[in-house]
View (cartoon, rainbow, N blue to C red):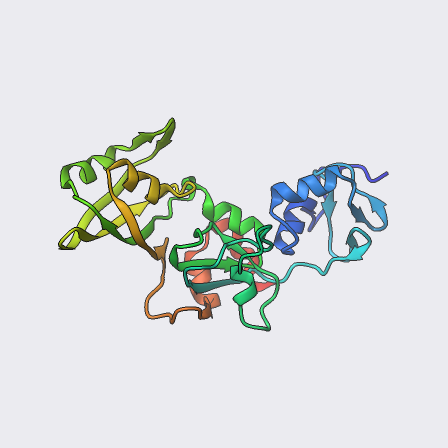
Length: 253
């Protein structure tokens, strides 16, 4: 039986290793370990504190897992009509079905729901995805939001103090009117948390119906002029400048 190892030179906790290899998020990797589906050097792994060192062989359900590549990040202009999941039980088209050939297995940094559009970051590093999704990382998500209904600018401004909607507490949100035409208005919305359907629920709370939602930036990364449905890799230089320091060492791998 493989015993947890507190420290091995050059070693890495196996759940983090699996996440960086693109197998699953760190949390899901720990579930794989609990289910005894992971083997290290042909020995079942029984503890998430087990470490992997260079040259070790890791298997999932008997299938050898390639060692993680260097950390990479892509910008994807998500069209509406795609769900951000690898497999949809309802059979709807997914983001990952519409990526160009040649990409390694990637996961998303956060999600955009079925009818939302715009910037979706993709990475081959599950641990990075988890960190960039955390509010503590401090990255702001910015959106252009088209709404229908009467816009109360004072109510929008009050979102800066946060809001509670149906028992869920949302953190501070910056929101303002960009333009109006009749009952339609375009809003600029910025937030840090990114809870499930947060923008839509806050707008509904204000009596507004969202008719279009476009994410235009996620932290320092911009949608810019990236064509709808296109994918573009972020350069290593930009990654070194923008990623949290804990991940910079993975860029030269």
